[in-house]
Length: 311
Image 1 (cartoon, one colour):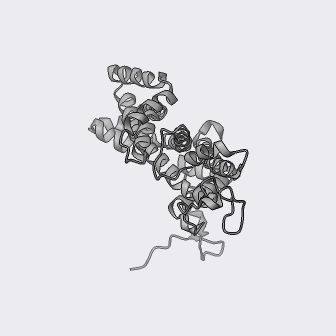
Image 2 (tube, helix red, strand yellow):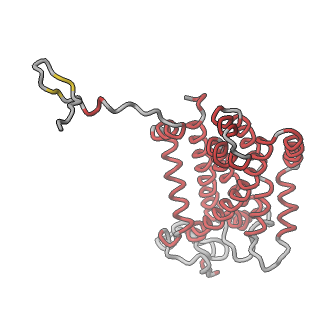
Image 3 (cartoon, helix red, strand yellow):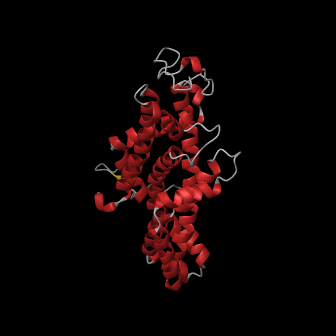
């Protein structure tokens, strides 16, 4: 059997091979693909991402950055200046400020991540329910969200943190995590609700419904994957806000306590000695501000990349 020749014939009758790239068509990129193209060109994104990776490495592997023990405090070194063994000097208890600043990242990141995950779960459930079902469910849950938003955040955080941290043996991590988690989900829920309302009116959702897909399948397989981008962006920004909130509560004396090492605790303890030794106050504040700024900048960059109106 003779094989059929699919190549185009040239002027002399000989088969002429087509270029390999002729069969390759430009595939349309998805929203995530377009966003990644924009992010790769965004210097702010790379700066924020590098800073976030550095902070996360500092929180998970603090011994890579310092070999000093943050709990090794000798009163004879009180307010000692910077040296080769203590880059930021010593605080009023004779503790290494650099070591305590490095190790302070772990508690702040831990509380921020766990509180953000808790807020994300609550916001996801509320956003999906209100956006998909609508009607009286939307009305009731939306009014409940408005009530939570109407409560002053700091006042509610103080009351809840005091209530959850009644155990004197606790270091306050669980109490602060629950407090921030149940107070910070409202914005994420509203963003998720609006995204679900927009997605459920699309043609692919109507087609899946006509093929017999139930509410659970529609929400999890069709609506959620196309609504999650803006939700994740909000959680990224919320993570930075939760880190700042933990430091605020710890500064007020109702956040982390006991043997916990936190930037908020360090700032609170150093406030009374700022005129004598400003370094124990300045350096934890700088690290805290840089961390919060990095997460907020990262969230803003991702949000701008995923927003088609800004392209």
